[in-house]
Image (cartoon, rainbow, N blue to C red; front, side, top):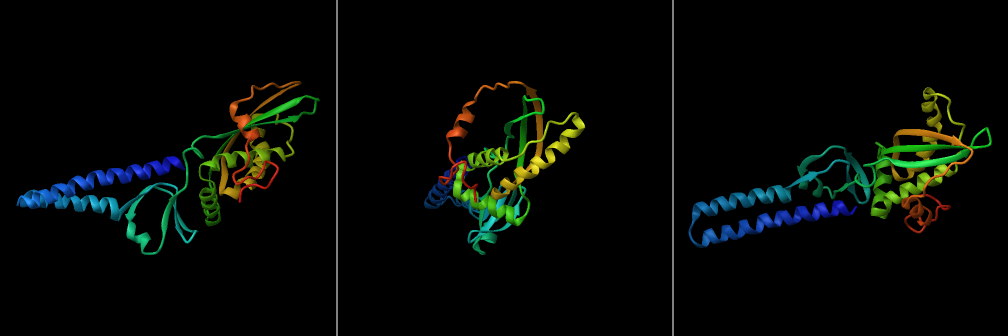
Length: 240
């Protein structure tokens, strides 16, 4: 996503902002026979080169990829030698978190109740990556294909999956909510598997009455007008 690209670009800018003045200082010190200063500048240049070119900071939720195939997953932030990956023809790709997994997805589903009125379930879904190779590969493929539109694609998948569910009657007590949500979460996860995601936590608040009114948010209008990335409509197939 764009914020990850900006961070990488900023890192390169800082690297060259440090390296160029040090090289200039090194050449200047040599040209004026200032050997001590030249030695200091040389050591600093080597340190900057080592930190900027040889050592690579790998952010959390990163994939090691070779020829478009995911090799393994790096869950935590770490530091490695760049040549460990370059010598094997591997690259590092950070899966998105900000804008995709940093906040819950919210859905409100309306269905008829047993008394001829309406019941509403307002779902709040916290998502995470599927921690297995097939899930990482699907997440990588969709991230490369859709980039910043991936978050919208996930919302559309949830929208489409929820619309196809046969919603049971609301539970009568707090102890029944977990059992009520289990089949719903299982069905929604079937669609999310296509993008390498799963529901890690789900909560629901219920409302019932003869008529339910909600103010339409701007996001809802965007969802109704939007298409899935790649031109697929809401009635079409989900993401790959």
